[in-house]
Image 1 (cartoon, helix red, strand yellow):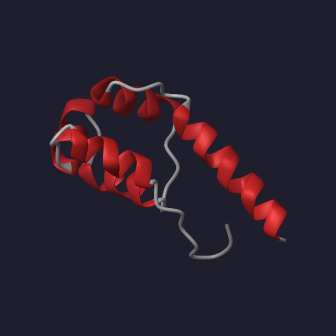
Image 2 (image 1 turned 135 degrees about the vertical axis):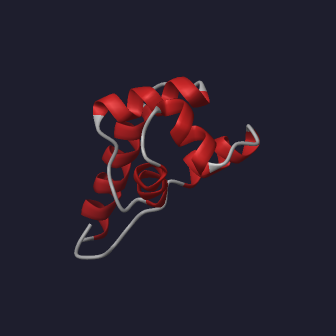
Image 3 (image 1 turned 180 degrees about the vertical axis):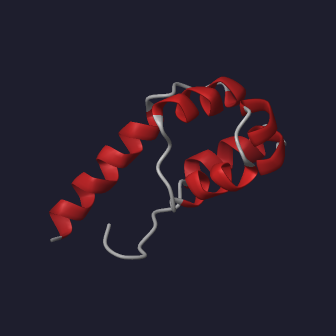
Length: 81
């Protein structure tokens, strides 16, 4: 990604909404700031390993998915270039 480009993690939004949770409720249960969670969801920020584990525990998913997403996105960007 180059300056200002963000890849929204739609899969994360979909999972959160399927569980009828708000960004605030996920962040509170994960014990992270809502703004941090929102930035991770929007792709403005990458999840750290500890935050990925916390969010994954709340949403009941594998924490490594955050890093698989980054790998897929970077691989796709390289193919386009």
